[in-house]
Length: 156
Image: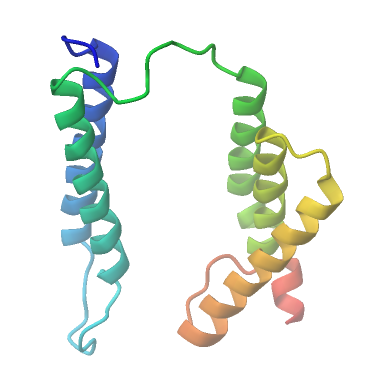
C-alpha cells in the first residue's frame, strides 16, 4: 500500500460521496402518497443511495489510508469499449421514446455486451429482448407503471 493517497483516487471517492448525497437528497424529494403502507416509490432509491454512500465512504477511507488496494499501475483507457457502452446509452435514450422500452433495452444490452468483449451480437440482442420484455411486463402489468411503451409494447 502506498504511503500517500493519490489525488485521482481521492477525487474519485469524493465524487462518489457527493453523488450518493445528491441521490439521498433527490430521494427525499420523491412525492409519496399516503396510500403506500411500507414499500412505496422511494424504497429502492433509498436502498441504492444508502448502498452507494456506504461503498463510497469505504473508498474514501481507503484513499485516505494510502490508496485503493490492488491498484498499483495505471492502465490505458479502452476507448473503443467505452465508445460501445456510450453508443448503447445514447441508443437507449433515443429509442425509448420512439420504438419503446424493449427495443431500447436490446440496443443497450447488445452494445454494452460488445463493449465488454462479446462477439455474438445476435445472441446478445436476444438476451436483451428477453430481459427488456420481462422488465417491461413486470412494470406495466404488475406495477402499472409505463416505462416507455412503443411499437412492440403496443401489441402486448
